[in-house]
Length: 290
Image: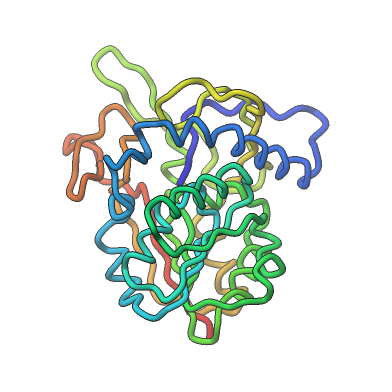
């Protein structure tokens, strides 16, 4: 569950290969993990529960999970993954490319007595890493797609991971949110378009010791790369992989305070104040495999 606050740096004249950029992201998430584990943001001391990371509409869209096998792609510390086990899933698997994050997720699940399996793998190699297993539900999002260079390839992986009748449920930060940035003003912080909404100009490179949580600076690998994906690109990738789209939601809610002006909403989430326009900050997509 991730997104950056820092301003992206211009890309160098000679770009690394896509594989090199993905490896840089992996190293960056390994370096972020100890900061995130110790942060108040994730509340691993018990101050936050797995349910805190979900909007009520997510459970409505997902339906009854009892007896179902659930896979959470790009799960990081497994803070959300735990909720599927608590909701009665027959078996829950979390997958992430960061060895440090997977180790912490396993430790946290073990200490809580949860029967959750965690697998270390890049999402592009998930089919092989999971031994060809297929699932009733694949869940992902909240800062996941921006780290994927090719959504068509990602959607094909998701399709291969689903059983016939299985469901993809994606809950992701809206591309409009990623395009917005705060601009200081004498009276109050204003939101302006700072970044691309659509893909087409390659990845954004960040090199910063800052992460989106509280805590000390990140030590070690600080460079990461993000790719922009408009809503149309996401929908087209899902349909192109042979999945049937059932619903798309857009909401003004976020699970944390992204901008200073945001005010508390229901369920401990956040929204922009009534004085601001209502704009989508998060979206959800559900699709099924025939």
